[in-house]
Amino acid sequence: MRVTVISPLIYTYGAMLISGVLRDAGYDVTLRRDLDAGDADVVLLSLYSTMHLLDGKIRSFVRSRHDRGATTYAGGPVSAYPEIVMGELDLDAVVVGEGEETVIRLLDEGVAGDLDGIAYREGGEVSITPPARHAPMERPLPLIPDDIGGQSIRGANVYVETHRGCIGACTFCQVPRFFGRTIRSRSIADVLAEVRAFRDKGVRRISISGGTGSLYGYSDGTFNTTAFVELLEGMAEVMGNRNVSSPDIRVDCINDEILEAIRRYTIGWIFFGIESGSDRILRLMGKGVTTDQVVDAVSACRRHDLKVAGSFITGYPTETDEEYQETKDLIEALSPDDVFVSAAEPIPGTPLADLVLKTPDEENPAFVRHTGDYRSLNLMENEARAFDLMMHADLFKPGLHVVTAEVFDSYLNEARGQGRDIRAVSDLLFRYGDHVG
Ligand code: SF4
Image 1: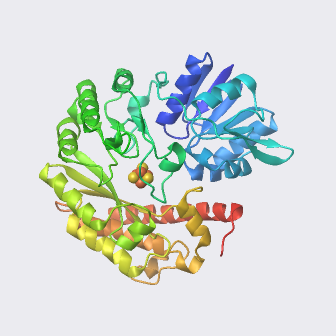
Image 2: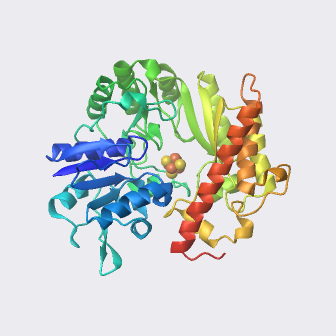
Image 3: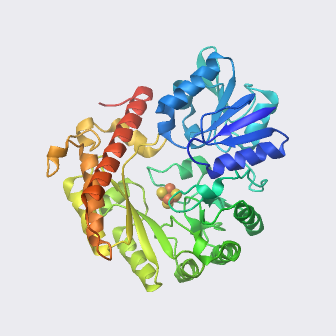
């Protein structure tokens, strides 16, 4: 059987992994980034953003296949909310959760009510079978496309998965819901074999994928710093020290050894999800850390001569002007070397999505018109705060940063785009859930 796996716009690690699993199971697999099924008998869409469900091109691609009687399945992070995926796209089935085992059975046996881990249509209704068990951490090599070296995601060609799960419970994040809160780590030998395979296919910069890198090897409430250090050292031996990065670490998941290893074996950056300067908002987000811990963690990084990037979320439901100001004050105090700003996006199935459903529109900055300094720009409050914070962060980055007209426009477009997407995702939520309005 010929299978085309489509991962829109970028080759995600998950799409390459599933393609490798199918290849080793004997399927004739092609992995693509564009919406071209080729001569496939079955298309498997690997969808990693809620916005894919609202994308006109993806919707018409799936509809036209459906109208021709061609089989299309979907999987990936969006499978965490299968009712919405099935409701929005004319798919034959969704592979729910970790799909490595389910997808083989689905292709071998077809859609069936006794196949765990799928959503499908039955008598006009969407049926969801019981969750499949977690996939084993031993796996075949991913199917690596020849042009992988040409893609760049935040500077890396590819993000490899070293473990699954997160001990955190951040309300806006899918990771603990999708993979669970128990950490399951791969063997160092397996990860390094994969890193070598990526390098041999032209990958020059490799990164550890989302979650918290230093949770690698974590077990029974105990960090395994040695394992994390060995992992970074091994990756650096294959790729070269300056071609490895280890982003996204919780501020409470570091120690001196971890920071020193990041300095020695990576590009020398650490990325913290700081999110807010308000302790009330951090509690509401379920971050499990305080702003004091953030300040201490950033100081520790500076002692180890690391550059620090921080991600921040603006416009969390019920965030007040004063709380937003606390975030600006924290950025001023920390002077991060780089800053990523996002307006809060309610990914379906997360506690944040539940909160958005329960929050009256007039208390949700995504739906409140901004009446402050930027009123002439016609922004929503979450957009205005995101835009303002991007510019504010530039003022406090080390070195001179001039907000040119071009930079101003790019920040404004970014904030507007985020606001548009968040309203679209919120509207999707409202269609499938009970919104107080
Ligand atoms: S620490 Fe990071 S990966 Fe873990 S739940 Fe929070 S945001 Fe998600």
